[in-house]
Length: 56
Image (cartoon, rainbow, N blue to C red; front, side, top):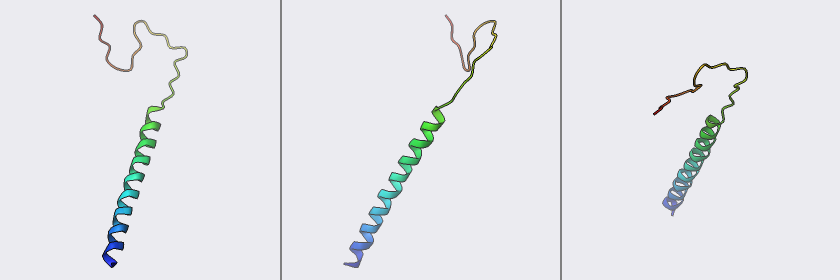
């Protein structure tokens, strides 16, 4: 009977660890997506881009 409580505690610990990982991962990915960019008084002769521009 003692083994049953150890197994149940182990499974509960796995579930808690997985839940914390998911919560922290979601908060980290949500905060990294929220970026504020000010584009006031930007004078550009052509295209203003932060990455690759493919034109045809």
